[in-house]
Structure formats: C-alpha cells, structure tokens
Image (cartoon, rainbow, N blue to C red; front, side, top):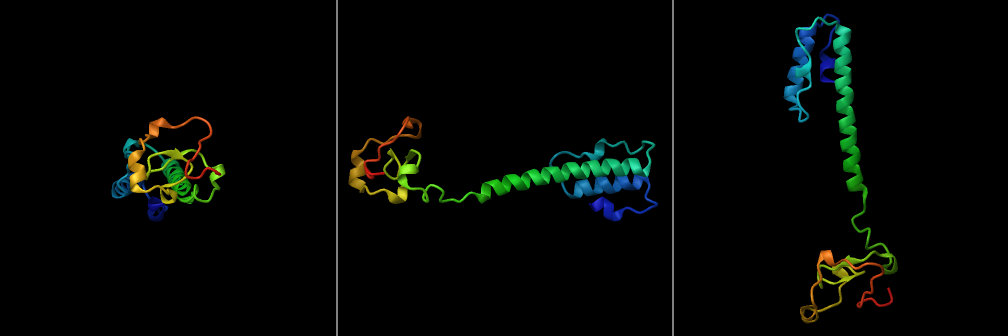
Length: 140
C-alpha cells in the first residue's frame, strides 16, 4: 500500500526496490525482510516488480486477516459462559475456593473457611470421569 502510493509511470526498478526496502524497515517486519530477497540488480520490468510487490502485499493481508480472525475468536466468547448455564448442564469444574470438583463456581461456593479447612483439597489433575455430584448443590 505504501509503495503503491509512491509509484509513478516513470518509476524505475531501483526506485521501487528502495521504496520497498525503506517501507519494510520502517514497518519493522516481524516475518523477515522479504524485499531483501528480490535482487535489486536484476533486469526486470516495472510490471514484474509490481507483480512481486502485489504478491508480498497479498501475503501481508492474509497474515493480518488471520490475526484479526484469531483475535476476534478470543474476544467474542462471553466470559460468563458457564454462569449462564443451569447447573445440570455444566461440565465438571474445580472450585477455586473449596478446591473440590463439582458444578459450582468460586462465587457460588457456600462453604465457610472452617468447612474448607476440613476438606482434602483436590487438584486439577484429579478430574473425575463421568457425571459429578456436587454436595453443595445436590439437586443440580
């Protein structure tokens, strides 16, 4: 895009190469300097160089689109996905307050500090298989 803005009908291959290198360095390309692979002394026409520039531009746009989709996928998910489900439909989860596997969240935990102290903490690796019984919410 930056190079196309500077192109004129009389642009030489060396001028286009220098524009591309300057732009690439200014944008601090993280994927490597692709323009450096183009031989600046090669006998090429303006159209051939424009074609290579377009290909580089397409690859950059593709990378940006992938990054945008990845970012959108992460941010589109509601943070309270589990809270919105009825307990009967929830998957087994580890409560970070009582350290017990069940279907309740830390905010929903009914146990006091004394009751929690009497329990044996469970770890993330102790994930139960199958359906989980939640003693705090027996009807869930």
